[in-house]
Structure formats: C-alpha cells, structure tokens
Image 1: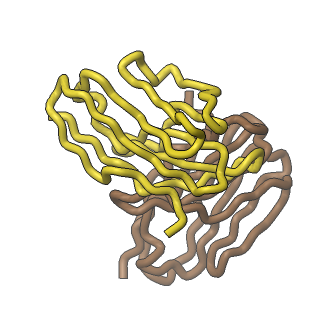
Image 2: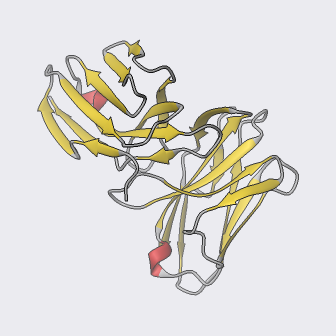
Image 3: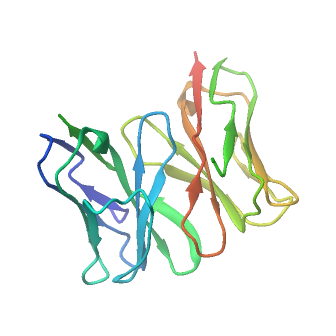
Length: 113
Length: 110
C-alpha cells in the first residue's frame, strides 16, 4: 500500500498524559499536512511542512502541540498534557509540490478520558 | 467565520433518487476538491476542479465549479446505499493548505 499511513489508528489516554502520532506520507510527496476533525465538523488545518521545513501553524495549534518532520519524510505530532478537548480525529495528508491536491491517511482517533 | 458553507448539512433520501449538494463561498479559489468520508476513516478524494465553469463526471456523480470559482455543486444520479457518507468540499488558494467546509452527511436508504 503506497498511500498515506498513520499510526496508531486509535489512542485512549488519560488527561495530562503525552501522546505522539506518526504519519508516513506518499513517498514522493514533499508536502505534509496535519488536520484535526471533531464530530460534525470538517477537518481543521493545524500545520504543514514542505520537506523538513514547517511553513505554517494554525492558531489552533497551542504550545502543547508540536510537530516535526526531521528528514522530510515521516512526521510526528505530539500533544503534551492532554486535555479532554483534545479528543478528535487527527488526520495527516500529503501532496506533491505545488499541486494542491491532498491525499489523506485513515486518521488517528484520540480519546482523552 | 466558515470560509466554505455546505448545504444541506444532512440529507436522507431513498435509493434511486437524485440529489444535489452545494458548496458556497464569498472567496475565490484556485481549485476546489470534493472528498467523501466514511465513519472512522480519512477523507477520500473524489475530484479536483480548477477552471471556472468546469464540469467533471465520475460515473453517477457530476461536479461543477462556478464560473467565478467561488462555489461548486455535486449532483448524484440514482443514489445507492453505497453513496452514504460525509461529502466534504475543500478549497485551495494558490499553495496555501486546503480549507474545508463542514460537510453534507448523506444517507441513502435501500
């Protein structure tokens, strides 16, 4: 399967714990995006990378959130001191160059209890 | 303020009926994508439209991009239960990340 891969698919964590999600984009895609989706909403942009450079961060991305793409390939999204409001589906997508068509992974569903 | 407004929010129809869902904005987009999402899964790309007035067909699905590139519609002919899902439109302005509408949740009843 050469699509976008996300791990884990599901994560249940206690409030206050840290969690980290991984995204492996389509191999030749240089852009990688993170979105968050809550029930009844469309995906909301969090941040994106072009190669290893993080080019934009949404105001939704509080300082508890950090994303990296160290070698321009896979990316990680870490949430520190999780809160119940962080419960959502976290979606990763990738695209090639300036062709702004994004392909999504299956998402990581986070539940904070 | 929602940049892309989708309507209706919910739609429940019988198998075999036709339907149209809409995606509207006051902003001009360089391209617009339609995705379908099933519960617990990521959005799956259906189509990209880039030219004002463009019409694309994908089997029973017809997508149209408005002349002014501010709006789009998706028409489904003879809907089937397999069409059930959340239909999302997403707009792009140049190289900026996609912005999404809230989606139309379609239920097709056999």
